[in-house]
Length: 536
Image (tube, rainbow, N blue to C red):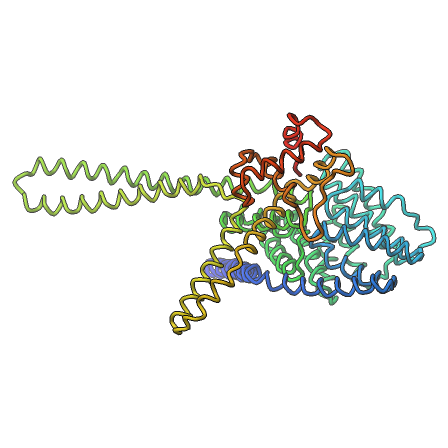
């Protein structure tokens, strides 16, 4: 009887384990599908932002400060966890509109939003300076609650970022004080109350109580995708601390899916999920997710998130390379074994010379084996070359050009197949090479200014005010700036510069001479000053 009971319990355990594993795999497949559909969510978000931007521009032209303020606040909501640079631009505009309205509450709310925006990018000092300069004495409870919440998060994030026993503990205490002030202003039957309570218990190391609060939040309230992502991401973190790894992974997957649906880039769920999958041995998936997490942090420009992802990525990437190297060594071992077999077969040839016909068959086998070995060695050499290739910034430009050429070829093929020969000339005439070159320059300008955002400002410091070079409204760099942008990248050969910019060598030399003659520094040291301009 006892033996049958043991078998029954064992089978139940296997069933439970298999069910949990199946649910996790199902969630991972759903996450992969959402990642493949990510562009659809981004397109919808861009459409909303374009509509709001158009309405904002209209209200600015008509000087309707109230409606302009509302649209600017809505645009800030869209960019808040999507793009720091745009969010910062709109929060600055929101501040100006708030001051233009003269309303104290609008001014206070815009400053709170400024503090949150700076915090999201990892600018902790700037965020705290902005928030601490705000007086909340005459503000309503709703604004005070928002103010205390942002301050609490600032100190919590600062504690996590510093990760120091002394300072982090002090920052966490300060964050709890502000969070308690916020909780005291929130109605107890609201979703905001349970979200704040879950965070409060987490920071007080009450992990089970915190998990209960977040579970109550997601089960009892109708919340947005973004709020759901924060709650499930927090549960993933809590379950990990409680040793409930499988539940932690499931919650992080749900959080990552919600982040994708809400087009959120300032997030940690996918990064933490990658770490868990790496620890479980799913190296390829972990590598793919951590790369996406890095892209999100880079696109949002969250400094602390990039540091966090950057600390994990080399470990996962190193293990991935180790796996590839292990496979390569295995192939070499197989090659060595096959080579030894070949030698052994050849030895039999000399030993058993009388069995001529059998040796002929063995010789054919050896020939095929050598051919296979040659193919394996070629594949290994090719793989090593691919590993050593450097993929440059213009990969996307080349890919786009190839797509256009393919579409051009298909258009000609369709016209020939339809015997519409008269249209071929129109197709060729409509090929706008000038536009392609302009697109090339535009892509170059964008990439360069992303690497050297302060280039134009630093460049113009070398000239008097009246001689400074300012690009037109419809361009990022002009020809003068582009020449010295190439020089800053290390391309100093006039012939190479002329080919890229489609000018003669003499024209490039003339441009450079004219600009150097206007500079306030010596001509001989001008290019050295250009090389001293710092990147990001």
